[in-house]
Amino acid sequence: MLEVKNLNKSYVNGAGRYPVLKDVSLKINKGEFVAVMGPSGSGKTTLLNCISCFIPHDSGSVRLGDLELSNLNEQKLAKVRNQKLGFVFQDFMLLDGLSVRENICLPQIIAGKPVAQMEAKSEKFCQMFGIDKIMDKYPAEISGGEKQRTAVARALMNNPYVILADEPTGNLDSKSAKAVIDAFLQAKRQVEATIFMVTHDSYAASFCDRVIVLKDGKIYREVVRRGARGEFMNELLDILRSLGGDGDDLA
Image (cartoon, rainbow, N blue to C red; front, side, top):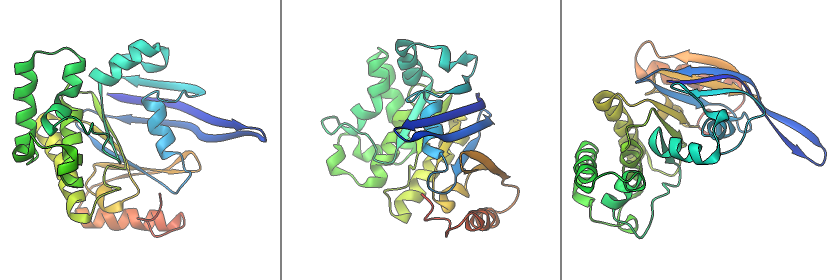
């Protein structure tokens, strides 16, 4: 579904070149919910931005299905981002002048899909995520958790290969964060959604199938959930503490 091979990325300033990602390789299978964690500066967000080609990588390969993304021009990349990738951001990225329903429909509006089709699909997702009663409200009128569930619904509209989520619970209280994680889990169960999430929150990560831990731009550990969620969360906390910090404060 998503395969990254030998990915390298450096930033250059006046003093020299600073490597951020160092020979990173990973694979995300269809229907998996995978998180990336690690200390500040470990390369988590840079990895996500390289996968989506919002920033170019220096070398390596990013394959989405049978597409090699680094071979595509900007016009083709824009089409891939609309039709084959879904995005969920920490700050929601909803359009204030559009209703919840219209925000959710936006990817299909851009793709030129029939109105009846997009409205039926948006209603299905709103019911799935418990936001059907706010479909005609605007972002300023709803809570942070409702905004993020709206963003999850929008990300699913074009049946993407993968949803890329960047700190999706970072601006939410614990109750709203749980509602968003529940939305991801529902999407995984009901439509076989594939989710790749960058997070500093070990609680959110403990619901995932796997967690990839980055350190200094390299994959430090890969942890598979095999038992109870609470045990998995404690295992993640122990790993993150060993890297220096309390786990949930590692941005």
